[in-house]
Length: 187
Image (cartoon, rainbow, N blue to C red; front, side, top):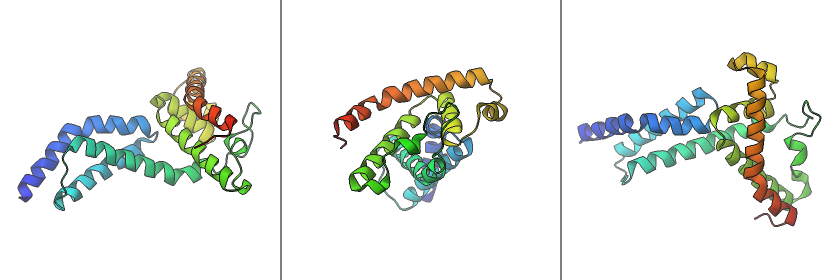
């Protein structure tokens, strides 16, 4: 029985590793975090198999575990990433913390803030990798374009272009939520 389990695990890792890895890498900007999540997913597969948990659709199960681990990662990192955004950016426009409803404004504002951050997290996760990387490094981690260029080896003009496309996509993705907020009906 243990031999069958080992073979099933080996087959799953071999068949799903590259596809699952790409799925995670498109959503997680840091390659080491992406690799950690991939390892966690396969570790959970080993544990579930050893505990004889019935997994009918292995591929779907693996991708769901990956989604859960990605969500966990963003939840864990969100305070760290969003904690220092209370300053104006280089263009003098307010940063995210200034645009969000204040938690001190009561439960409705706190709920609206939560909804906005969740939608923003989802929208950022849907960006193409190159756009997501420059957006996260510039907007959330506070690096200058010069620092990002040094770190990534990508030219500043290319980074500016990627950031512009990222902002455009995010605006499009978040427009429906914005319209709901303006009508006062965030649900």
